[in-house]
Structure formats: structure tokens, C-alpha cells
Image 1: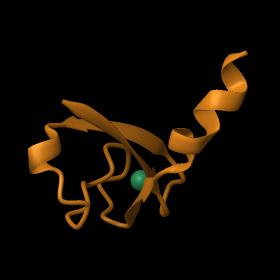
Image 2 (image 1 turned 120 degrees about the vertical axis):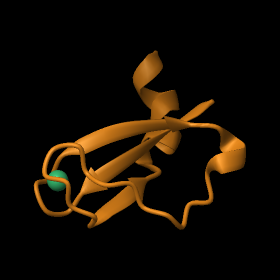
Image 3 (image 1 turned 180 degrees about the vertical axis):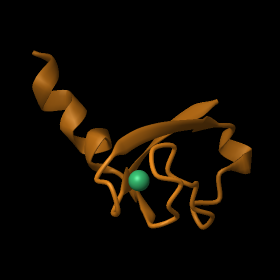
Length: 55
Ligand SMILES: [Zn+2]
């Protein structure tokens, strides 16, 4: 199981989706839990930002 961060372009909400890596294609966009919109995009920023904020 891995978590993926998404950002909704409609309501500006950020949410995390947990799904098995094998199931994650990166092409299918989940719908926003807040506004049920499909204009979501995956965030990769947390992937890079993690190292600097820890220490
Ligand atoms: Zn939304």
C-alpha cells in the first residue's frame, strides 16, 4: 500500500489516496472527496520536500 497525494483544481482541496502500487497507474484520476470533481492532479512535491523539513 502506498499513499498518493492529490490536489483538486476545483475546490483547492488536497487529499491522500491509499492504494496498492500495482493498482496505481497514475493515469486514472480519483474524484475529489470534497466536491466530487474530477479535475484532480497528483502531487509529487511531498516526495521532494520531505528531507529538508525533518531536521
Ligand atoms: Zn474538489
